Length: 177
Image (tube, rainbow, N blue to C red; front, side, top):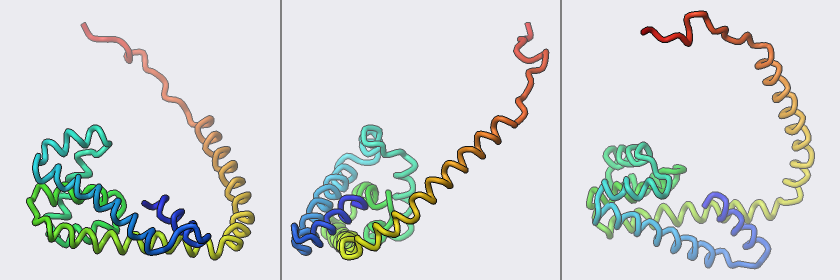
């Protein structure tokens, strides 16, 4: 959402999309995904979430963090997590595992998702309105960033080329018999 929705906002700025239609479509898409995640947790439990997680790059650590938020804040965690990167995508699993009431889950999810979608789409609109100043600023600073990256790379290469290498002692590599 962090990439797609600001681009959607830019399309709104250009007049290709209507703001509230874009918010509605984004919200609907997010709700469908989060309901599926909630259902996996609710009906199949933590083991199924972990099995699915291996296929979608959801690590157990991410689930543990989301479960911690859910344990600490209860149902409100579903709302709060919508504003935290990565957490927003996994909070539905512990909510489902904890058998949160679906109506409450949908209410908190919808509020958080709508607010987040409005913010990101509006940022895209603002970027469109200020595109010329953004581009001129980028034109000015991108060469400086490039030069800084080159200098940084040279310094790293110098550091590693001058770093003394660990010499292998005569006893290393020999195995006791």
